[in-house]
Length: 159
Image (spheres, rainbow, N blue to C red):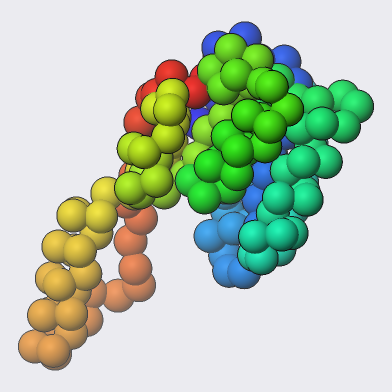
């Protein structure tokens, strides 16, 4: 998703993520860092706690402070939605004045206007694979360690 944002001409990106709660938070941030390094751009990071007040404060500092980014790569659709809220208060138009992306591809991504560019997890495929793995394990056939499934970029008008 970071490469997608860069390809759209954004020059000052910032990653907005939660203070890591699990490996998924670290992996999302790492993807941003890798894409920025490949593009020869500095990786700007903002982390926040889970509480709504902490998120609002972090996003407000990010979007109203000096050196505001041209786009925010958020580690979740919920964080992206917070960017929409703060941008609206600051008089910024999403997709025009500020690009925003999310991650999860959940219901919230489909409720935002303009439509959020997000990364969706293939939940249907994931559920099917999980059921298959459990069935094999119950039958006494180990499939070994887990597997990786590719995520899906869902372009919206937010970038």
